[in-house]
Length: 417
Ligand SMILES: Cc1cc2nc3c(=O)[nH]c(=O)nc-3n(C[C@H](O)[C@H](O)[C@H](O)COP(=O)(O)O)c2cc1C
Image (cartoon, rainbow, N blue to C red; front, side, top):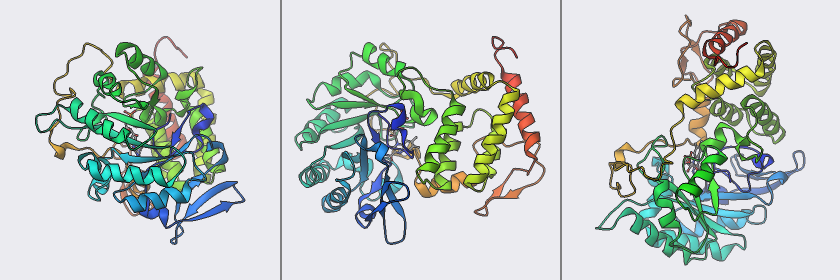
C-alpha cells in the first residue's frame, strides 16, 4: 500500500492500495467533475482552475482519496462528489503540520474524539465505498499510557463502521528520522477487530516481514511512505528495480498522466534524494520545463553509459543507505525516550513532516539548500521565483564529469570498473 503522497499511476508496481495526498474538504467540494477526454482521466477542478484531484483509469480499484477535515458536513459533501470515481475515502488524523492542526484538522482531531467520530459517521453514512482513517500514537495523559489512550480511541472509531485504521507508529511530535514504535503495534492492533494498517519505517518488503516476525504483529497490511518515495517499485514481489530506471519511468508515466512540471520536478528531486549525485540534483533543480528535464535525463543516460549503470546504481544505493534512518526492528530494544509511553513531549519539536503543494513548488524551484552546494560555483543565479541560488551555470558536461568522479570515489571495491 502506498501512503498519501504526490505520485502518479504507481499501481504499476503492485501496490494494492494507493492514497491520494490529503485534499482539504472545502477545496474538493467546490470542484467540478470533468471527464478529460484527452488523457482518459476524471478531473476535479475548482473555480480558480486548480486541479484538486485527477483519477487515472489505472488507479481504479486501488485508489483511496484522503481528506483533511474538521467539519462533518464538508467532509460528507467532498466525499459524495468523488465517491463514484474512487475506491475509498480516508480521513487524515495524523498530520502534525501547522496548516492542518490550526484548522482543527489532522492530528488535532486525535484530541477531539467527539468531532473525529462525527466526521467519520458523516462519511460512512454519505458514501457506499469504504471509509478509513489514519492516526498516530496518542500521547500519555491523565494517568493513562499512550497504548491505553490509543486503544481507547481506536475502539471508539471502530464503532463508526469504518473499514480499517492506518496507524502511523509515531507520536505527533516525532520526526520522521526517529524510529517508528513497532514494539507497540501488536498490542494496539489486537484490541480492535477491524484491520489495522502498519505505517512507519517500512523501507523494503523485508521490513514488513521483520515487523510481522519480530513483533508477532496482528497486522493485515503495511503502508509504505518514504520507502516508496525512495523507490516506488519497492512493492514488486521480485525486488525493486534500479533507481534510475524507476525515475525515468516516473517521468514518462507522470507526463502521460498530464502531471505538471512542478510536481514532476518535486517528486524527481525527492526520488533522487540529497545524499548522492549532488551535481545531478543541481542540474535538475535548474531545469525550467518538462522538456528540459527530459533532455537532462537523456544526457545523463548517455553518461551513465560511460560508467556502467550497475555501478551508478550500486554507488547510489550505498550513498543513500548511509543516510537512511535505522528502523526500530529489534524486539528487545527498550528505548525509553522513544518508547510508546514517552508521550507528552514538547510539541514545539514538531517537524515539518511533509510539504504542501505550494511549499513543494517553492522547494522544487529554489536551491537545494539541504544538499551540498557545488563549491566550485563562482556566481549566484536567480531561480524562477526570484530566490537567490548558490549555483553557477556550470556547463553540464563539467558537472557530469564531477558526478562521475564522485561515483568513482565512492565505488565499492567489489564492483571495480
Ligand atoms: C512527501 C510526503 C508526503 C506526505 N503526505 C501525506 C499526506 O498527504 N497525508 C498523510 O496522512 N500522510 C502523509 N505523509 C506521511 C506518510 O504517510 C507517513 O505517515 C510517514 O511518512 C511515515 O511513514 P514512513 O516512515 O514509511 O515514511 C507524507 C509523507 C511524505 C514523505
